[in-house]
Image 1 (tube, one colour):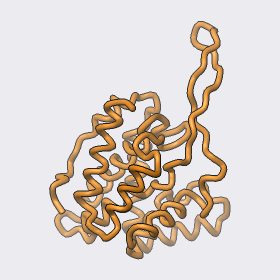
Image 2: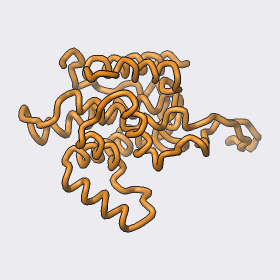
Image 3: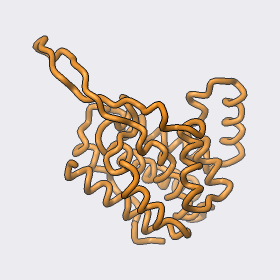
Length: 219
């Protein structure tokens, strides 16, 4: 494991332990440590964060972005606790653990020579409870209690992208209108994906330099 990846996972765990005090969080962290590849998992197979440790980096980026959006919108009167912000941002993609497997393929380099390069593919048997949004809620329910708004936010954080029917898109639009937390989480997710992680060629070491704007010692 790269040192930057190891340090990033330690920072991620620190945020979980510092902000989330809900019963069951210790078992959740133990699950991430011992039964998943959270520390090294990519955030996607070939798009944003498609490298070792990309999922942790993406989760931290979303956490920072969501905090910034809510602070800008509400100032000191934010209706959401630091715990809620941490849960929906740091754990919205928890179902992407144990999802991707690393394979090798032959490609030609700039000199025209064949070389083997790694790439990720999704395991076909990994998501058994709907999409990755539904699976994230399903996993979290086994460890901690979620509020209604937290569930809605995680379920609709993709903003309807990938929905295969107009009815599903309409359902997401209704959720984003009725639940501000869902809308802000979707915005934070898109900002992290398109701005912070827009250049998929950045190395994990370069992506590690996230500016921290949240005091992790606060509860």
